[in-house]
Amino acid sequence: MHRIFGTAVASVYPHYVAKVERKGRTKDELDEVIRWLTGFDDSELAHHLASETTFADFFDAAPMNEHAALVTGSVCGVRVEEVEDPLMQNIRRLDKLVDELAKGRPMVKVLRA
Image 1: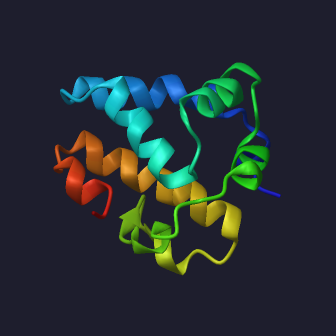
Image 2: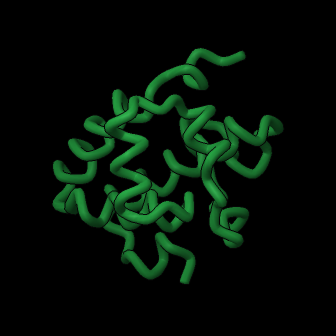
């Protein structure tokens, strides 16, 4: 089992916020991306962050967007669509969406609309 699976989402979330804000995006946009991917609403997302939910439990509880498979590309040299473990693939999808948001990609494209 990979170490990230047992890591609390709340411990990584501030790094996501800092990354997107450094690039001129907002926490609200980040939350929108996370809600789109996971299917959580604002209160569910806040609950998971406050409860120190691990990535494993976070994605286990997430209904996931039916279009999540459209999130493709490379994160740290690893192709998202080629990751075999479903949990790791979802974590990589989230990383990819955060990267795209931080790079200034239009929200409509980030959310695969």
